[in-house]
Image (cartoon, rainbow, N blue to C red; front, top):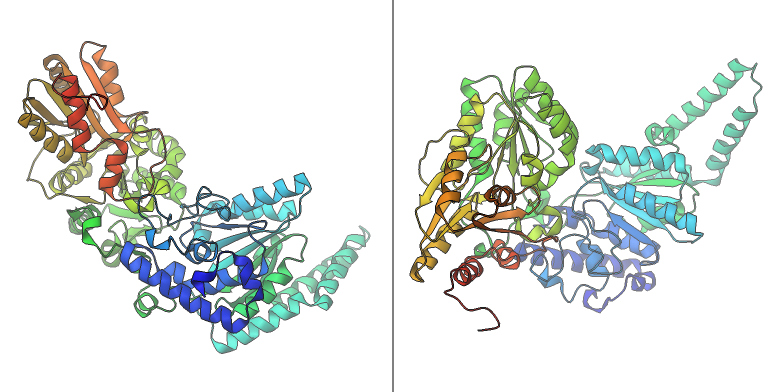
Length: 614
């Protein structure tokens, strides 16, 4: 059936048996594609029936659906006309791994980061009401996203707004036993019944009409109401926000979800429908170890960068260092495994803090730990570090708190696409007074930077890509660069993964009669003033190579310092969001590949041909 579906409207004419069979087809398609291309597997497998039920009840694209994070939207993509291209998932020019408005009229906002769907949906609902339009708005939010404070800000606002919207809470952390399932259905029926709703409204009106002098009676009626509410169902949290709560219900029971969602759409206020799903459902390995199959690497190893996983090595070293230094503590924002801290946490649970999707809190708490005499290592993906910029500024830098930031997945970041590129961290970090910023070109440089961080008494950020080459054992001090290769015609200044590209470029230039030097600028702040001065005075041409944006880049500062005496060409990521693809494809896309750089330098040296001449 799946290949015949061009619109989710077709679900409305299907029988329950057909929808259940369709769920099986969707699961097989998702599993086969993700195991080949890579992507988010377990979360998507758990949300199949939920997505079918939601699209069966709503009328998309008139009705708007926002998926929090978006890593559970694959079934949504398959039901909205993207089946034929689904084999291009996460490839350059292919179907994105998250919702993207430019990709389909059924996607109403770009996703990729957690905890924003309720805010987006509330904004859309308010826009609808201000325009006098009539359509439904739904937000699908995982229980993991609810560890982010932004969800609670949005819920608090949504409750007082009285805006009509549906919030589907996808809870995949617990299972429903038969007894609990039956009880939850009974309670949900009771809450939806006209008798219960009328009784609740009657009590509210009665309490509001009570004369001021009858405080005892007023308190009594309020207690009766709250007691009955607690007896019926424990929804005190949402009720305190004036948000209706329905559930929990089985997130794999399509008929029950459709019935409850239809009821939820009749309320003139925000409604939370709590569904319980099984992460990885339908694929045994993912059901047994859902964390391992949360994000899957491509089957084709050539699509992955070579080299060791930097996070894993850092985790090993921190675990070893912690045996001799009781002040070392680690902090993660729901990414213990991804950032390599899972083994450290297992061995030192009292010194490892997973705060959930709460980067702002993580950064501020790290500052508190540092001010309390500890040595905190805060490990975050570069793309998520952005959310804690105010805390890095005020709580860490201003307080001169010696927090050690481990900025994982820095630079171009592959198939996850626009929302996950770590290309903004250089400018963000270099702009903070007193912050030491470094970027290793190898695993051994990473280890030396960790050694330096242990002795450093000021904030320090180590930024690195997912994988790095092993490199050679090396020792250096803070702010010290390395001359990798001497030359006379041009100097290539690079750091991180771009150092290896600079060396490849220099070799290719040598074959074309151009003498190229290479400097490994492993410290972006403070910089090696002595070496930079020598380079500016020795070379007629300088190329800086960085997989970061121009604003705040090292190349921007070097160009300013040259004062026009030396030609400086700054090669950075262009001023646009970088789409999904392999790292190699993204480097080509940004003009940061060896061949492009060689061609440009040959032209600058009068030894090449322009595109027009070619």
